[in-house]
Amino acid sequence: MARSSPNIIITGTPGVGKSTHCEQLAEATGLKHMSINQIVKDRNCAEGFDDELKSWIVDEDKLLDAIEDEVKDGGYIIDWHACDIFPESWIDLVVVLRCDTAVLYDRLSGRKYSPKKLEENMDAEIMQVLLDEAREGFAEEIVVELQSNTIEDVDTNVERIKTWVENWTRDTAPATS
Ligand SMILES: Nc1ncnc2c1ncn2[C@@H]1O[C@H](COP(=O)(O)OP(=O)(O)O)[C@@H](O)[C@H]1O
Image 1 (tube, helix red, strand yellow):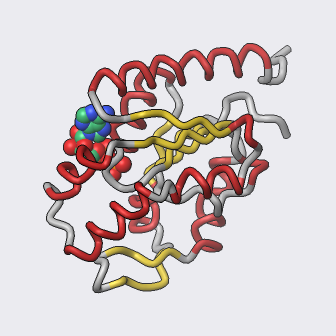
Image 2: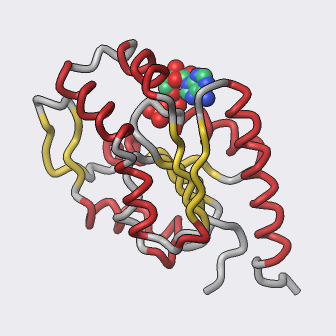
């Protein structure tokens, strides 16, 4: 069945500003912020914990089962550092947030990550791992790369995505009558 509201993934390396964008976007658009980190914890979708990286190892099948009923109806802003596990048919827009290396370093240093985790995340951003993943997993025309260095960037990005949502709703949503 066609969705009456779009589903958007906001992805990118930890620290680029996903949660910040999702919260503001949810307020601006009325779409719901779905934090996958939170869902993994709340709905027991982890298959283990990586002690070295201090992060959950996600059972992807369990996660998809846990969110499918909600997401298939549309209206979600999905907040996660990976995007290629989500079926293409669920998703209308993939936003990959990017950040300058020095800015990201400062943000991640503030998080007290282990040196290994910090280095892995910095490498991922420099090598544009998440952008490549998005481009491999989804049609080129639905993948958008946006900068997230400053607060002004957040405002501009939120406005831009809000306009996209309004256009999608006008042009794509099924007629209600
Ligand atoms: N574009 C931005 N400009 C300034 N600070 C930002 C920006 N995006 C995020 N931040 C700050 O960086 C930190 C990490 O942001 P967050 O949204 O938690 O990132 P993520 O969800 O990608 O891990 C937060 O302290 C947030 O306030």
